[in-house]
Amino acid sequence: PDFAERLSQLESAVKLVYASTWFENPRAFSRAAGQGRDDAMAIIIQQVAGRNYNDWFYPALSGVVQSHNFYPVMGMRADEGIACIALGIGKTVVEGEKSLWFSPAHPQRLVQFSSVDDMLKNSQLQFYALDLTMNSCLHRQHSNLVRRNIQDAEEEAPVRMLASTYIPNEHRVRDDHLPGPKIITFARILKYGGYPLAEQLSELLRMGRAGMGCEVEIEFAVDLGRDPGDSVLYVLQIRPMVTGGERSDVQISVEDIGEAFCCSRQSLGHGMFNTMADILYVRDDSFDPSATRSMAAEIGAMNRGLQQAGRPFLLIGPGRWGSADPWLGIPVQWSDISGVGAIIEVRGGQLRADSSQGSHFFQNITSLGIPYLTLNEEKSNRLESRKATAVHDFLDQIWLDSQPVSQEGRYIRHIRLDRPFVMKCNGEHSLSVLVMKKEDSEGVEKAG
Image (cartoon, rainbow, N blue to C red; front, side, top):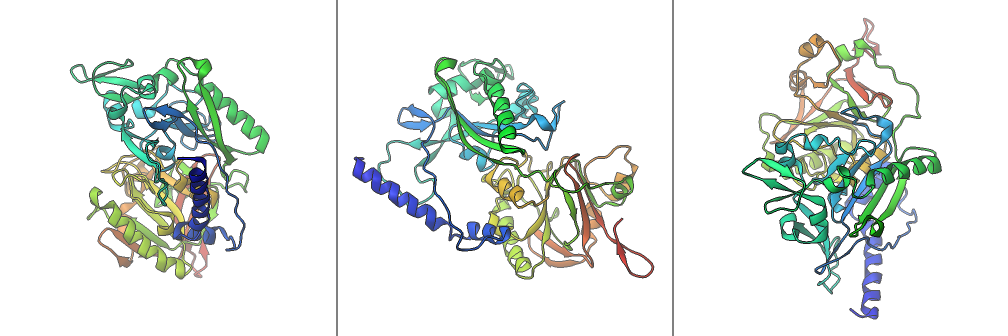
């Protein structure tokens, strides 16, 4: 298009961004954050990072890096940070689709790629790119972004540089561009150091912490050239990361763990919360992984009633909350859960996905200081948890199912307790417990 047409498209895009603030999701977030309707908003116009590959424009990789890792495993430390990357434009990462997590201090320790089967299951299959053949500016979000299959871009430079090849006859993955299915492993960068991404991200985190005086989150993109010297790392955004570690100390005793109906060793948030007596959870007896969109609709309907009544609630369910891929988790929008007081994400079962950490949905949660717990083990009852010799993740499903039902949908059950439970979150140790309040002989409530 000529200059005049491009300018007209830019003006339309700016108007659309302003108009988007009247959609339900932004308005629900503003209400939850206590923002006024008349708050001013600036719009940033930013050049897209990347280059042209056969009429497709995209960076070789993009991602998010956080200075605090709430899920340190395999010898990692929380203060070493965590990064999430994907081939192509960053929508893959921020929408919670398949991407690769790694610690910048330990780029070769990849939990998702522990075995060949894990690599086949967890590797990215699709990516986003701009279609340069589209001259018209369609008036909807991401209108010129196209989701492409990795296999359709095998001969494009980013895939050649970042993919390995699966050899079915050997059930092996080779870090070469050979005939056969391609798997995005980023081995050339993370394993062989063809581009110093890990070192650069570590330095960015150090500078971000020093400059902002707090934990930070950075969005970035990398345009890879044929030689490392021709490659460019683009810093797209940097913002404070809400960890809650600056608030008052929260002590979790052995007695708390023994009396809890839920315990998580990988939790986000800090403080003591005692205002929730409502719990929404996904029913085990009717769970269907193909019906996650229906589950999101049921949650949205219950959320509206609870929010109007001023009753914050605990939300419990499997997989990745807010995922754009309904096969990885329940694809709720922020407006579906805008009244939530805390969230529990259960891994395992029929929906096995990595945490929501890093997505825009997850950023809404953290910016509002909402506790977010991850359970990595199968559900258990309280008796089994008391027999354990070490602290482990558990959710007492038997206790949940025995509570009075307030309303029940086909997939979601809403229980209402006779009094609020106590949630204790220790952000320093990423440990949280949920305990029912007890009543003494005079009927005065006290925490367990």
